[in-house]
Length: 107
Image 1 (cartoon, rainbow, N blue to C red):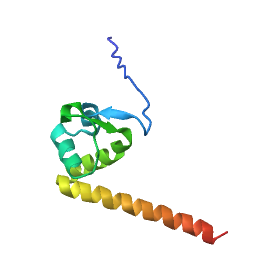
Image 2: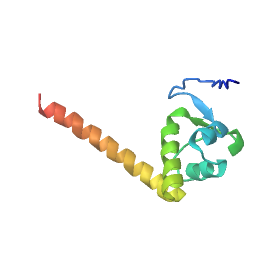
Image 3: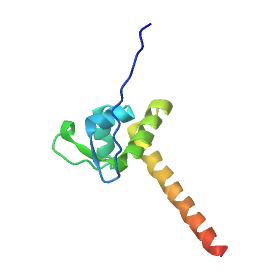
């Protein structure tokens, strides 16, 4: 019986690292055109010349993954995905602020 072995190259990425756009396409299941549109709408801020050469901050990975899921799973267009991601992040920020204020009030 043949045994199949998969080898995965795993590298931990810090928030200050940069990731190639092609790698983000693979990780987030997006095409490069979608990343260009998301960048045009301000969801991410790439560096580099042509989109094929772009590098994006690793901290953008959760935003891109969320936008990708919204577009793929719910059929949301790019503009709607950007708006939804920004609103969800704002909601999380507000929830954190409320928790912090509640902790201060209960001291």
